[in-house]
Structure formats: C-alpha cells, structure tokens
Image 1: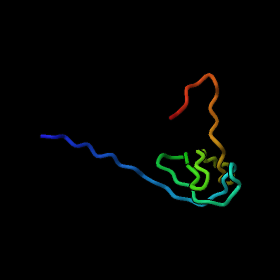
Image 2: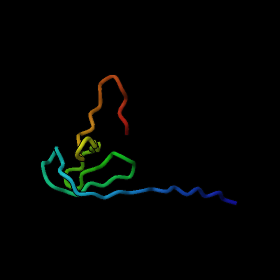
Image 3: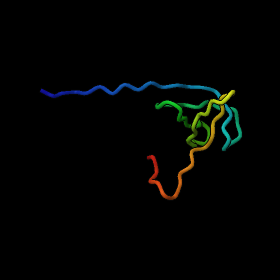
Image 4: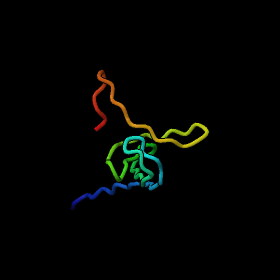
Length: 67
C-alpha cells in the first residue's frame, strides 16, 4: 500500500508596484509575506507599516541563501 501525502498550498495573488522593474504588476505568493513579480521574476518581501509595500529580498554574505 502506498502512503500518499498531500501538500496544501495557499496562494495569494495581488497587484502591486515591483521596486525592481518599477512596474505595476501581478505578484504571486505561495508562502506568507514572500512574493514573486510576474514580469521580472524577482522575489519580494511584503512589509505592512501604515501601507503595504514590497521590498527586494536581500541575502547577507554570512547567511546561506533561502532557496
């Protein structure tokens, strides 16, 4: 008997301004607070502080990359 595990994704699709390509575009998320621009493909983090903004994800040199 094969034990199949189900993986559940909660996707979110929003419109926003990508700071990398500077275009109003569709942003797609599979995990909370992290989005990918559908035009340029850059990964962004959502910040909410009085308004919703999307900032590029930066990787510091002393930490391994997320992906």
